[in-house]
Amino acid sequence: MRIAFALAAGALMLSLPLWANPGLVFIAGVTITGAVFALSWNLLFGFTGLASFGNAGFFTIGAYIAAVGLRADHGAWFLPLVGASALAGGAVAFIIGIVALRRSSGIHLAILTLALSEVLRVTVSHTAALGGNDGLPNIPRPRILGFDFGAGDRYYWLLCAACALLAAMLWWIVHSRFGRVLRSIRMDADRTRFIGVDVAAYRLGAFVVSGAVGSAVGALYAPWSQIVTPDLAHWIRSTQPILYALLGGASSFWGPVVGALAFSALDYATRTLVGLSEIVTGVVLLVVLMAAPDGLIGLWRRFAPKLSKSMTPAPRALSERGFAEKMS
Amino acid sequence: MAFAIINGLTTAMAVFLVAAGLTLMFGILRVLNFAHGAFFMIGAYVAWSLLGDAPDSLAAFIGGALGAAALVGALGLVVDQLVLRRLRHVDEHYMLIATFAVLLICVGVAKMIWGMDFHSADPPPFLDGGVAIAGLFLPKFSLFVIATGFVVFLALEIAIHRLWLGKMVTALAADGWMANLLGVNVPLGTTLSVVASFALAGLAGGLLLPNQALSPALGDTYLLLAFTAVIIGGLGNVRGAFIASILLGMIESFNALLLPNLPGLAVYLGMIAFLLLRPNGLFGASAS
Image (tube, rainbow over all chains, first blue to last red; front, side):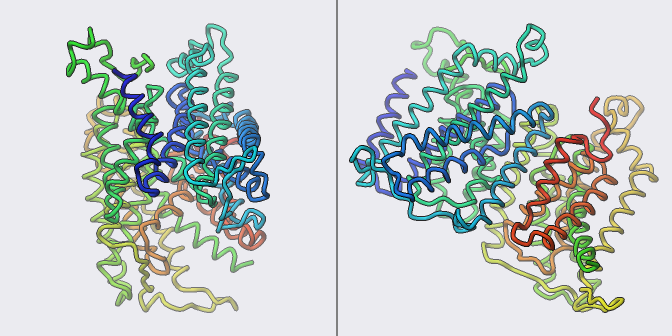
């Protein structure tokens, strides 16, 4: 049943350019990058227990690397550019992580990461070579091995494929031995340390992976929006993956993706009335926090068995927070 | 130079007015309230609605700010009952995100009521213009902001350290369970401090209304600076926030003087250095 849903959603997203208007296709592309960005954030929050409020910084690093590369007519080298962005994001995350993760956690870490990404934003917005406050416009779409991704909706499918690949990679990481150690750190860091795990090293590892993926997604985003501005690093952007992950369910791997889709649909439906979209978003978020801390996926796990008793044998996941460790 | 110091002090006191409520809230609830900046913004809008573009007199202006404080304090009561109370025993991250949701709602409501256009208000006639002191031409309104900052600080100092109410709240912040055992009405005390924190945000909004571009995004800039002041000062410490605000105002002012190309950068660098070197802030109690 779940696989059927996933396939239907995938087919819907992939076929979008064939029947939807260009505006909707653009929003879908932004949503997909947002979803993978949220997955990379949730590797820290949902699986390692670290709340970063500055992940938009990584996104910005990747977006600017891709923007500069593409504008310098290196479109043929787009995929290596994405790889380079991932490396750069990972390296920055490593440096920050080595200093920050040892010294702070909780609210301090949240504010520290927020301040770091603000430093990036202020610096970029005053760097003339990066377009200052106006950013870099007119980013051409890549042209790989003579195949022009600028024509039609070709880049949309490249975006889908690349994001699917990144998501698969994250899924694999979460479900590997490394991911299981991260989860045990989130549940109880002291006990994990006690059984001989180098907690700091694993946290740093998760931070680096999150930074690298966030930066790669940023690089994929640049040619899709065709403009990058310093506002990408604004702290409001850092809260976006948080919204997605909590709305969908932070304790489930696919939660952030579900949240991104639901959130974009909500945003699209309320876009016409000034102010309404913020109110709806805020109220939905509050209701989710108070009534369903495991997000939409948690709700689904609670109520789906009741709706289709004949199909699912037992109501297995009455997910209390912290116990919802059954990954989808 | 002297001008930079006055400028810095003006920024400092403006930041302190916002940070005071923020740090009070953290002291009691252990919550860093993202929505504080939004309630500051609402306070400014309320004062503007009461006074219009040009307040008639100093008394009307202060009355407008007090009105904003009362209304935002009442809003605080609503938020406390509807949201904060229900999430009191939840993980701090969820609380942080809940206040962010409140922030979103506030910004949306402000956009709906007051629209997206920028508004501005003049200082009241008494505070318009400037005075010449020792050969320096100083805007009266800056001096007023500095004076207000000191007055609010002294009032809080007295309320917290000298009055019975403040002692009750301090006891409650230190150990709610024990305070309860000793007969302190904990829910009442908590609610009162939350309302006081919101009222301070409203008051700051009303007092800092003149010379601002009033827009739904007004809260953002002040919120980040106030966060910085609260953290450098040691979370939950009013005295620390006061000194940290002065420090920040000076950093900001000299940043504008020495690095005019990168406004606002030094403050963040200072905050990062502080978080790494002294994570508990100037006067923060060491984490137990």
